[in-house]
Length: 538
Image (cartoon, rainbow, N blue to C red; front, side, top):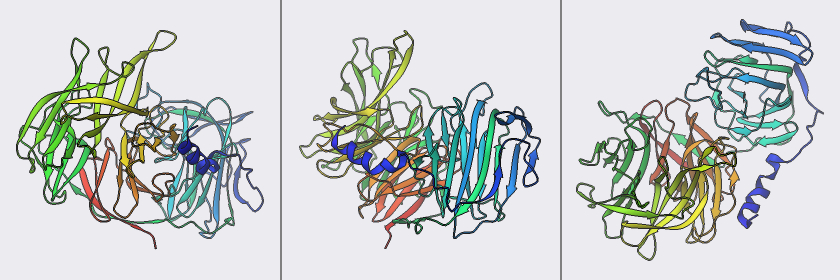
C-alpha cells in the first residue's frame, strides 16, 4: 500500500475495526423478538402483511400502501440512543417495479425495508437494499444484505449517527442524524414506508435503548451558515448539472447540461457579473454539443475552455473542441483539439467516450493540466462486455490544441481534483456500483496516485475547493445535495451538512467567491444557488 493511502487507512481504521458492543449500561426501552406479531407497545400503520416464521417476522410489501410497525418512546437528550435490528432482506424492487434499487433516488418514495427513528428533534435511520445498507440520505455500506441475517446497530448522539454491522463500526456518521423530526413525539418504526417500491424481509429482532455517552458530544470544527436559495430560471430550456468557474474580476462562468442525460447532449455556457444572482447564455455557446465545460483564465487574461464531449475519427484519433474567449467572455474562436491516451483507455469502439471534466489549471511552465475520464467497453472472461471507467490527468503545451497523458488517478468517473500545494493533490471520484465515493492522493504533482480509499459518503459529481481559510470543501449529491469539510487537507472529513434533500439530478458545484463565502449551485428540483458562509470554529 502506498504511504498516503496507508496513512488514511490508519486514520480511518476505527470505522471498520472490530469493536465489541458494550451491552453494559444500555437500558432497553423497547424490545421485539420476532417470535410473535408485535405486541401492545407497537401500532400497525397501514396493513402490514406479516407472518411469524421460525426465523422471525416476515414482512411483505407488494402494493402501494405503507405497512410498518411503530412505537413511541421517551427520549432524553443527555443520553445516547441505541437502535438495533437483526434482519435478512429477501427481495426488493425500486421505484420501477421491474428493477432492483440501491438508493432512495430519483424519487424520495421511502423504502420497503427500513428503520426510522426520531428523538422528537431529528430523525434518520437505516435502509436496506440487496447490495448495501444505507442511511436515508448519504451514508452507504456496500454489502450483501440477503445472504444471511445481519445485525445492524445505530448509535445516536446529538446529530451524529454511527452505523454498525455485525459488531463492526462501518460509518462514523458525523452529522448523519440531521433531518428535522416530523413530530415532537419520539418514535421508532420498522417495515415499509414505500408507495411504489416493494420488498420482503424477515425481522428476527428490533430494539431501542439508551445509555450514558462514553464522552462529551464532539463539536463541529467548522461553522456553516446556509443562506436562502434563489432560482436560476431559463424559459423553455431545462438546465441541470452545473459546473461553476470563477474567472476573477467579478466574472463567473457556468456550464450547464441542457439535454436528456445522454452522450452528445447540448450544453450552455452562462455568465454572471453579480456574484451568481443572475445568469445569461453566451451567444454561440448555448444549446450545442460542442459547448465547453472546463474553463480557465489564462495568465494573459484570455479564457481557455474545452468541450465536454469528444469524438473518434476512423483512424482512431480522439478529438474535441477548444474554445478561446476574450477576457470578458463576449467573443470566442474555436479549433479542434486532439486527446492522446494509452490504448487501454482510449476510444476503440462505438460507445467508448473520453469526457473532459470540471477541473483545469495553469502550470508554472505555461502549460495547462486538465482532468478527464474514460468510459470504455471491455470484455469479461466469460465474453460479456462491461464498462470500465477511469479518471486521468492530461497536459497541453499549445493552448489546448493537443492533450497528452500524464497519469491515471484511479478507477471511476466524474473526478474532482484539487491542488493542495505545489506537489500535493487529492482527488474524489464518483461512487459507482457501491455508491461510496473514492479518494486518492498524489505527492508528486499528479504523476502518481495512492490506492483508492473508500469514503462513507456518496454518490455523484463531487466538487472540491481549497478555501482561503484553509478549509477544504467538497460538495456531492444524490440522493441529497451535500457539503463536507476537512481541516487536514482531505485526510479526514469531520464536518458534514445536508444542504437540500429535494430531488433532481442532485449535481452540485461550489466556488469561493469571496473569503469564507461559497457559492453553492445545484439542480434539485431545478437549478438554484445560495451563499454558504464557512469559518473554522473557535
